[in-house]
Length: 533
Image 1 (tube, rainbow, N blue to C red):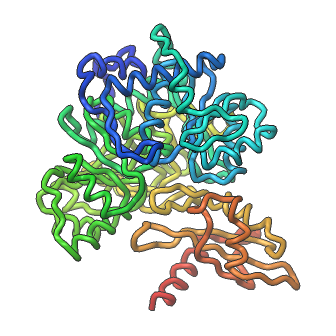
Image 2: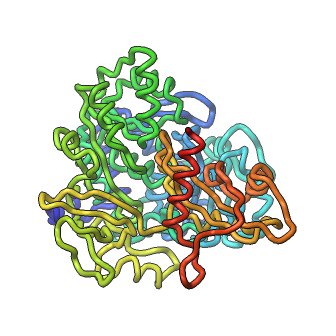
Image 3: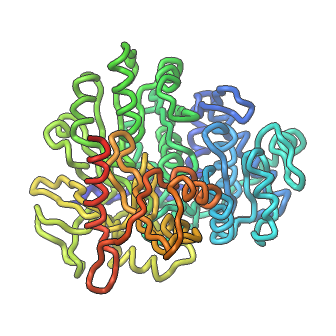
């Protein structure tokens, strides 16, 4: 199961900085990026303005002796899209390595990522700056901290003040080559802490090219999404729009009414989101008429989208193309795609490979399984990561035989269409966010009353999945779900804190005493079914 793997000539020698320069030269006055600035104002900037802001941030970094190859973190949400975009492209202009840091991380998670990646400079929202600045002694590589927003934080540089007093050095130009490191994209998986997927400029550009093709973007398109820019999906949505030379619009939050208004205001042609957004959109459409006459395609991925949602989208928006994707962070992201008309005939499939991607399913001995049989989904191509940062053993395991082993269990039918049927990884995908159960379990187990914790995912009608936690308490101890959730606050990002917590007397186990997650999922599903009933 493969797609053409011969890179087109226009990708030869290309880096993210060169890609940006090419688009600026072609259409400097075309709107590149639209969204909220840190000043709280909806803003549009052209390719020339994005380039100017990027060069200014590169100059800021250079003045502070941040060098080629140094890691620079950006920890901003979609309420500061303009600053995020300029900072991201400024990192590439300088030739440093971009590391997005989840703006919803608890402080301990931030410290882990900064230290794991060896981040030298970090851009952070002013409301989070004080907490990060207070922990600088625990992050020895971090010597430059820039806050974005009107607030002032002791010991931090101000983005606005730097913008005023920094002279833009136009001689700064990245001389990196395609196989130099460009990004470290942290992703949750089966390990307790996030893993940093390394992407070179080559893999990032190839992924951008492939995604632009999967989205069928042209220069005239306006792509809109609520995907956070600190996620791999948000990052690559931006770079694929830059590859296409079109406009990308970022929503500050998943507010359906605001998203619809922005679609109309920006004359959006293509929207990409998770299944949850489309469920909310369908709910709103059942209450009032929605004008989406400019939209040509709804694209979704990041969490399972059910056949029922696809059916309702087809009935509710018959003139709009529907595109379902499977694209893990480690693969670029890049992967498979299905759209009209096949999506209506194969609503449980995630399709066939994008350009420059190969896909196969293998058994436990790494042998390719026949069509129609289950196996672990593996991908190969120039979009794939080069490994996990600082984890050579994990990298070797994930990239065994030159194929990325996704940890997902799938079936490829005789026509070459992939369906994801289960996950080998013990991971919950809640509203498009990947959550490692082990990470949550370790925090829950730190509670004084908890002897053991087990976490599984359960189906959720809007989020795709939700977290169900089971707790065994220590002898003589007692607690409540509310107290446990309060304990997690500050130790886990808010979306990782379980809303469903059951205190139990026993857990299902195998012969070696290991908790049987498959049996636990069945129990969780039944518990939630009874609750709904």
